[in-house]
Length: 322
Ligand code: CUA
Image 1 (cartoon, rainbow, N blue to C red):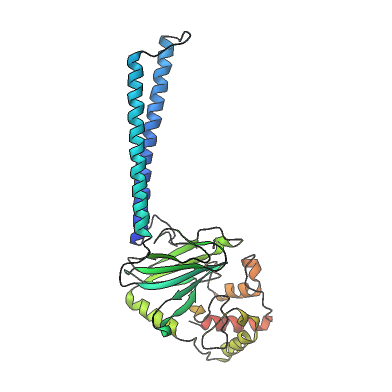
Image 2: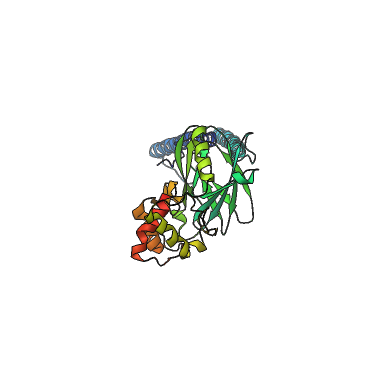
């Protein structure tokens, strides 16, 4: 699992990492110097007292006073210059990584934070190529991706430590940024703003692929859901369509078209369920459907009454949606 700002996979995260290393080294050095000087002066003072105990008010000589003033003056000047330098550096890196317009030739993805999952929409001038999915963002490696951030309910924060810096998503506002993964790989992201009970279980994945693989993924995702072929999955589909699931979820190619919860058209192709909470396996899915509150207390996923005999066909069907 790659979720660390020290394992950078793209230019924005690299800038942030360089800044952090520079701040750390410079401020660490200053800390060491200050502590060393303080210890040295304590030692000298101690020796001075031993040699010549203070009697009443002991005024420093005019020479010492002058030296002290000059030293404090220079130290204050250097401090101001360093702070100014750090501020300028920090602001310029902030500007570079949060440029609202990505470099040319970008792919545009709209990410909406909701309690507690991520709605993902690939934007395109051609409406037939607009894709709706959830909690997993595939991108082509080596290309800047424009991210258009929104929030449905409360403030969330979009953060992929390996690729970019935190960006708050605020209801009623559009947040623009961009990110890029230099090589194929998987990067875990996490909501970075406390947004309620399940804030910690609001994760997602960025899957960076070669352009060919990405195009293949996109073409497959744009297809309607695959039709069930055997009796088991056929039964699963009819159980799904007759259940309360359809009040929140959509599966393109069927009558399920609600958009309150994640789109499930290609659910079986995703790595995780419940916004990165569990690996996407049949066992986990059965547990999640049977008792969502047990896995994610407070989740808005409803507990839909499913008969024990109906569970297997239902999860077989959902997992077949590759
Ligand atoms: Cu969404 Cu924290």
